[in-house]
Image (cartoon, rainbow, N blue to C red):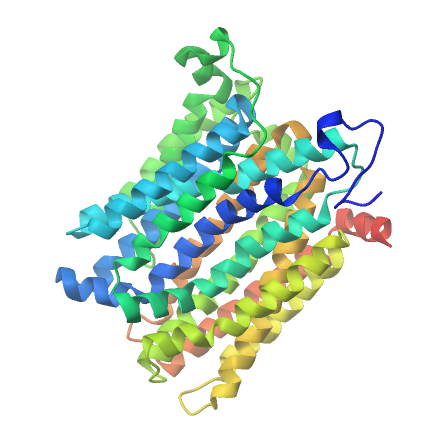
Length: 472
C-alpha cells in the first residue's frame, strides 16, 4: 500500500483516493518551516540590532535563547493541546501568535520589545510540528495506512532542518538589503499565507460544554505538570547558558521544581510528561537523545562556523550566509526521497558518519583554507541534517504511541532545542577569547566526540535493527 495515494474500502468517504492532497499538506509544511527559519534567520541580524539599539552584541544573545526556551517549553505543550482540544485549533492559534510577534518585533524600539516578540514567535511556531504530526497520524489511520506516509514526513523534514539551513542566507540577504527589522517583518506575509491555507484543513470535532470549561481543560492537559515542566526547563536553560560559570540559584530552582513535578507526573493517570512510558519505551528515549546530540553538532557548526567566517576568515554577512546555502540545498534534495522509503537505521548511520566527517573537516580548517573547503564542510553537514531528520522523525512516528503522538513530537523538538542550546554554550566557551582558528579546532574536537556517541547510539540500538530488517 502506497503512502501518497490510497484507495481503500476502510477509508472514510471524505478522504477519497488521495488523503494527503496538497490542500492538506501545504499548510502543514509552511507552518512547520516557521520555527526553524526564525531560529536561524536572526543569526545575521544580531550585530545590526546591537548597533542600532546601542547595546552590546553579547546582550542580543537573549534574542536567540528566548526563542529556544519558549520553543522548548511550548512544543510538548502544543502537542498536548492538540491531543486534547484539537490540532487545527491549536495550529491556527499558533500562526496568529507568530503574526503578532512579527509585528511587535518589526516595530520594536528596544531590546525588551524584541525579546517579547521572539517569545511570541517561539510560542506560536511551536504549535506547527506537533499539530502536523497529530493530523498526519490521524489522517493515515483514517485512510487505512499500515506504514508511515513517507512522502509527507519527507515534506516535514524539508520544512524543518532544510529551512533551518537556509535561514542564515535569507537573513543575510534581508538584513543586507532592507535592514534587521525584516528579520521580524518577514513573518507577516508568510503567516498570512499560512493562515489562509490552514483554514482549509479538516475541522476538529466540536468541543462539548464539559470539555470547554477551564477546570476541565486544565485537568485534561495536566496544567500543573506543564507548569512544573516549564519551571524546570527554564531554570535548566538559564543554568546551561551561564556555563562555564555555575549559577547555583538556577540549579537550586531546577532541583526544587523537578522533584515535585516528577512526583506529580508519576501519580497522574494521564500525565503531561509520561515518565513511566518514556522509561519503558527505550527506543523512543534513544531517538530523543540522538536528535539532541546531532542537532548539537549541526547548530554548533552553523553558528560557530558563521562566527568564525566573519571574525577570522573575513567574509561579509551576506557572503557568510551564502556559504551555508549548499547545506540547505543538500538537505532539501535528500530529505524527501529518503523519507519515501520509510528507512530509519540507514539514514541514522549516515547521519553519524557525516557528522564525524564534517567535524574532522572543522578541525583542519584555518584562516588560509580555500573557500571550497568551507563549501565542502557545509555540504557534508547538509547530509547530516537530512539524514538525522528523516531517520529520527520516522523512528518517532513508528515508536511513539498513537494517542500521544502530539506530546511525543513536542518532546522530540524539545530535546532538539536542548542540543541547540548546548551548542551555543559550547560556542561561547571555545570562542570566549574571540572567534579564532584555535577555537574552531576545539569546537571540532567536541563535535567529533558527539558524533562518536551518536554512532554508538545508532549501531548498538536493537530496535533499529528490527526496523532495518522490516525495511529490507
